[in-house]
Image 1 (cartoon, rainbow, N blue to C red):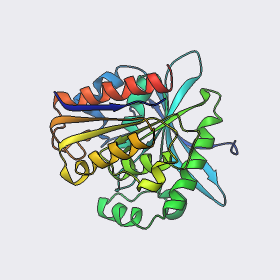
Image 2: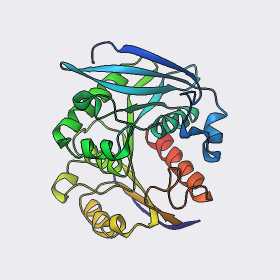
Image 3: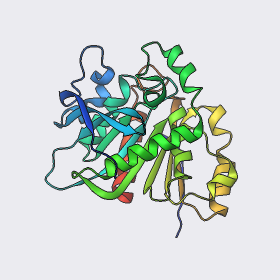
Image 4: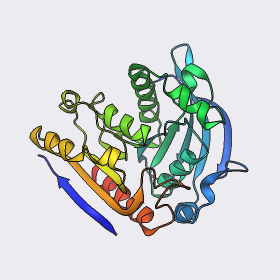
Length: 274
């Protein structure tokens, strides 16, 4: 059950280099965390996923792209990973979003500087900690331009979603890209108050009940967004903790996970279209 709901309403890149095709609907090989029961609804819909390299100056960004099966171009969502880098979980998120009708792309934001995210989570965390905000923004700009150029994407109808560190990056990227149509922040911190004034996209925040480190700032975030005339909605889910949408975290496996994903999908369909 949802604990609280608060809604404030207001008024081309170079061609991709394909380097792996993973098959249909969550087929990424052994060890994938996409076999959870809460991903079953997404896995029931056949989607096509592939790995691509997106040129970024002299470097490139490794990314997983999931496509829905539909006859018309779709809106798109950029999936921003946690502080551990791109793990096996984020592509399952892209598959879930593709199952709901969106083209979804999950970039490895370590790849343009450090190469592929290392398997050890501690190593990934240390490397992510070395990423400058300007580099992250430039990488996300490249990903945005790439996905916006795909024939299967409805031009300009692009949003973001991020988790933990990535949630903060989803919120921060909204301050840097006025073309963004929607931003979902899953238990991530907000940017500083001066940056909030630059946000054009509506923002949805998804939070766990037992996450005071993040939630303590929410009243100020709401107040500032309201004062700036920005659209910010937040939902806090009972008996969940930080990172509850991912396997192994407090609240995963409870109804809150499916409730949160339904709300996220509703938000995208409202802001990006179907």
